[in-house]
Image 1 (cartoon, rainbow, N blue to C red):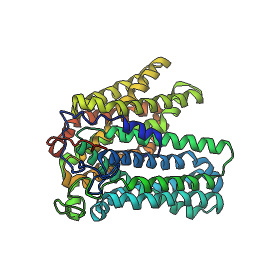
Image 2: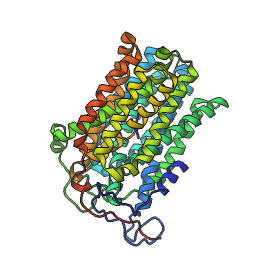
Image 3: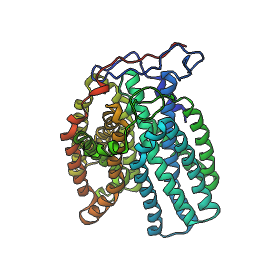
Length: 451
């Protein structure tokens, strides 16, 4: 669902070519390039751009790791609590309510204490919630305790998601290159590591409480180390009172962002692409089993193809965005996703299905991260607009599964996917709203400080 701590992030981060600036996306200059007094920091005590960027990669990865730790152990949590499926659904709904609450309140929290402090507090509380989730289910078998843990976990995850995307946008604008897809690829790698760890620990008999407590401790240590490398100054000016720049926005100004046409149209892009991603996460494997008569292993393989295409698109998408800019890339991505999805729905052949699923995943990969970049173009409105757009996107992740489940029950899951295709078409029409503007169009990228 979420969108969004390891060698994978470091490898991706180290591969950045900072001397390549995108002609379509040349951001505003941020003062992080002074001569450092020690590796990773400048003489003013601020982290170098490289340290800042790596820290954001790690934060995205930690968030993905935490989410996967919960997703992968849901069967064990249900069994430990000895609850019915509908009772477990209430737990999931509690997390969803927490997530929406966190997303709606995130811009106000960031405006009050800044992104660095928001991430510090959010990650600490999030790791505590993961530990409580394990102890509450496996040690105490307490349904109310697990419900509280999931509501808090959902709320902190929503806040963290917005704050880390704002930090990612700040790195983009400092370095002069669109790299938000790589940050989201780091989140995906975090989920892969988290899921693999959960599967491995479960296979060797490690208890649920020990697993989640261990993950919480690991995530807490990684979080404290990463947040130390985030700049104390504003990732994007106008977000808080720490450092020079315009005064922070008022509550009314942040809420007014929901009435701005550009915010809503960017939200439409993210809504369509999030629906494309979420529907595959939740229903693709089952659609292959029920709609194409595949066995469970083939259904799992189909989802693996989609996940591989998503990760590939997010890693390769940075260079494509450098070369062509946001609008052409989003148009091509949406078109590719529509063609792939239509191929899957209409052609009953395993090869066609494989090609269609890969095209669908590749096309859906860039919508959410590029939408976040577009939302952060105007620094004074970045936190509020990112929060609004993220809320719209996560609405798709939360509402999409039950909607498609209902339609699938009536018409079949493959036919239900036509709704997804229509929403991707809406995103295709809305793509001009993501055109580079404001801070993303003007200034010179900042180079890393020499070490």
